[in-house]
Length: 441
Ligand SMILES: CC(=O)N[C@H]1[C@@H](OP(=O)(O)OP(=O)(O)OC[C@H]2O[C@@H](n3ccc(=O)[nH]c3=O)[C@H](O)[C@@H]2O)O[C@H](CO)[C@@H](O)[C@@H]1O
Ligand SMILES: C=C(OP(=O)(O)O)C(=O)O
Image 1 (cartoon, rainbow, N blue to C red):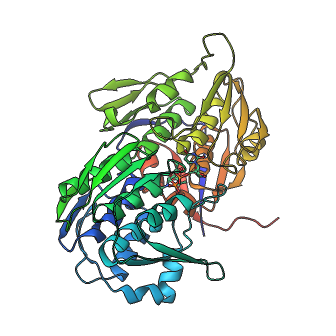
Image 2: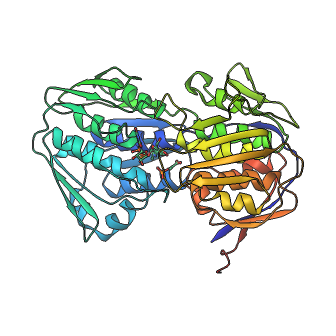
């Protein structure tokens, strides 16, 4: 297993370009199964989760060609549905969260699909009801084999329907949209998630010949079509990486320009960092973060303590709350971090407390951060990365801390951040990859 050794307290400087969006990539790659025609996808991030899904598509029979570092073509002409029965499918399909999104397209095109219970971060309960209730509404039948932790779904003829989602699930909406585009008649999805990932997916499907309206809203109308064709698609820059870099710049007092961010697609993300007092400027399509020693958290208008909470889009994404939390530890002022969606995503604060941060974990969903205004630096420690975003938050804490830190289990970080050590070294960070397992206690 690999670990990062970081010598902290060094100011970084320079330009960094965000990778393509991980969560968009997982949707877009699944959508190649909807057509036998060629699809060209660019700005694909070279990260573990995405590479696992590409490998899974190859195992299913998709012809894949790598054109250059971030561009591939896919042709799903000869799909091998027997692969569902193999042990390889059981282990690979369960290896990431995003694999669940092959179900909708396979169901739409071949009338059947299967998937082992998908993986992803252990950040609380991650139910899939929205996905399967949606498929049922379209006329599919599903069986969950509890012993094998395996879902089987069948439908000879999907029929458009009105579907009111029980929650605005991101991957659930994507899955149902991909099933509905080839269903007979009209499907209406209300309480749909509308993250940029989904907007991108729907735009790509329309370019393939689908008829989806309401893109960007929580009411999608889909007129089923008989067949979809090929297209080209380019992934947006990863908004979670962009937010992570803003936080990193503030914590390490660094002057950083984040290049080509597609600013108009970032929603409230820049505003939330500004509420922490962080200065940042839009320069063309870049974000410039000046070196800043102090930043002060705003209060609400009535003077009460600011709350930063997650919500489905256009609310603030839960995937950036851990970053906001770590950045607040060095701000002036207090903030309540309220992670409404996931109940186990804030437990990593015990590591920040070990580093000297002042945080009270009120309950599994809420943490109060007492920002110390850089009165002292966090101190480097050894720690294990529990999930992808906590992992990057700990990395940011380590870069700002005094002394040496070791982060174990960096596979978690590398699920979603491409060549992160190399890219940070280019900004001047002292970060080394070593072969080491977390010590057992
Ligand atoms: C591969 C992928 O794309 N993963 C993302 C996707 O996961 P994923 O699609 O798995 O997440 P969901 O949107 O289904 O739900 C996330 C969690 O929030 C809860 N929930 C959801 C909607 C809602 O209105 N109320 C509510 O409480 C769900 O019960 C669940 O616990 O979306 C999450 C929420 O943005 C992100 O954290 C993940 O990075
Ligand atoms: C939770 C995340 O990913 P996944 O849904 O793949 O576990 C994330 O990207 O922050």
